[in-house]
Image (cartoon, rainbow, N blue to C red; front, top):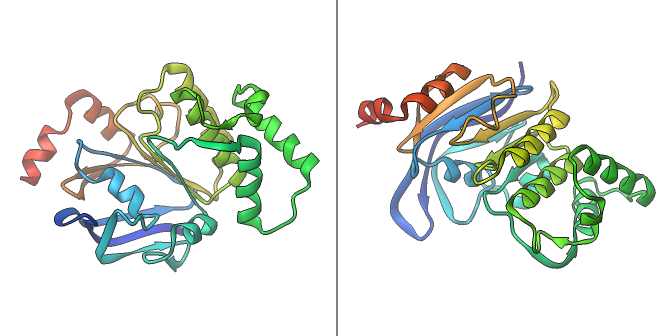
Length: 251
């Protein structure tokens, strides 16, 4: 089985506070076709991990490397990493006034493929995805995320994911604050996306988004490193008992 993401002995600090150590020797390998889940208490480094995979300027990698699809991307630009095939869904998607959802989707597709877009077939594809996600087609002409509810913003992100068709999707607590219907839409989008050649990394606190997915591995992140890895039953254990046993072990 081919490795898609291979994170080795990763250490990071905060850009605005070099004394603030966040990731402390984190190791993680995700193979093609796998679904992984990362769980951990607040402040454990989950979102830092997601952002470090994109070389966010908010964090500085002091040691270790991130290998994606056979290439070291540790110091690559976020734009390069995106074009390489990683997509991240944010906790709080940005609003972009003056740019319609349709034009944004067209722009990111062209940026990824560097190919001329057949407008008719592209909009046909967009409309089909919107129908499958239960989105009103009129949203394609609205300004990106402006005035959208939390659930609507998540739908647009899932639509972006489907249009880009990345090799790896990172969902950073994308289910946070969503109602049952919105979570169903996110799950539907993941079903449409998932195949044997791509992978998903889900960062979550709740069972809702993963209960309909075939999860290969669940990782517990405490104090910036993975302290336990198991199958889907590990998530059930955490939902029932919390992190106290792992926090005690780490301390």
